[in-house]
Amino acid sequence: MAISTSKPQARNQPSDDGVARRLLDSSAQLSYDPLTEVDWDTPLDTSFHGASPEWSTLYGTAYWNEMTDAQRKALTRQEAASVASTGIWFEMILQQMVLRDIYAKDPTDDTVQWALTEIADECRHSIMFARGAKKLGAPAYRPHRIAVELGRFFKTVAFGEAAYAAILVAEEVLDVMQRDWMRDERVVPFVRTINNIHVVEESRHMKFARDETRKHLARAGRLRRRIHALLIAVAAYVIVTSMVNRKVYANAGLDEERAIREAKANEHHKSMMRASCSGLMEFLASVGLLTRPALYFYRRANLI
Image (cartoon, rainbow, N blue to C red; front, side):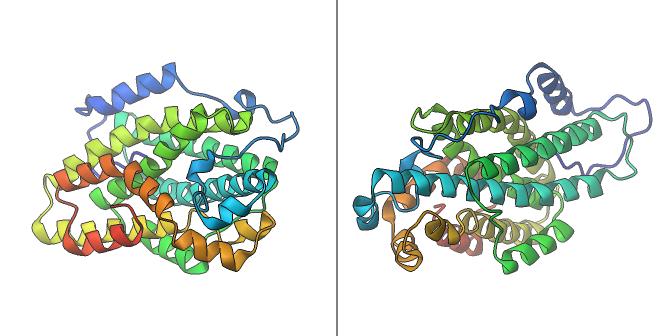
């Protein structure tokens, strides 16, 4: 998600940000309309999973081994819907930050136009995720009230590298699991299409976020870097721990309390999360954002 914090350029002055122009060109060549690309009309086939079972929070636990095949599929459908709902929540935060940042800036600038393109992408993604969750037979899963208020605070105070790196954390975690889901023939076809669309379009957002994170950190002092490193880590913790709502277990017909206990102790799922974030952590380390306080929250979220 592009959030430019550079000073607006004079009108008609060529942008010096070639990344934004290349991403605009890429978007023009390869973008999707979920309303026509996704099969919304075919009824849900409950013989499919909603996500790769290896990504389930209960995969590898004693409870998983006791579950019937139908229960496992029902659970992954609810979990996929919960991840989608969390994605909508965070995308709404990002859209507000972007709109606030580009307000009154030169709309002829490539970076501003890329920001508007990303907002359009995220609007389509949010509608796509909402329709997908509904088709999976799930309710509107929402993060805990505390997470909602922390998100409200974050979108108000985050700027520069704090905003870009937090965007990167959210998108990179989702990107790795969705790349597995979109290739997995056990996953219901319309969810695979949704994941493919999101992976393709978010790859552009992540490229810009990495570039902007480096750019802003190049002029950040030591204190600002340390403060933002912690803010990014806290945001990552809240996002990741909000992905799977505790109600997915009851809605899949499981014992909610037992499922929560086993999910929290599930070493397989923790290892999947750590593996998915290896590249992200290498990037954060390379730009000096893995401070000791930040590492505490990444470990709590099982990202490192």
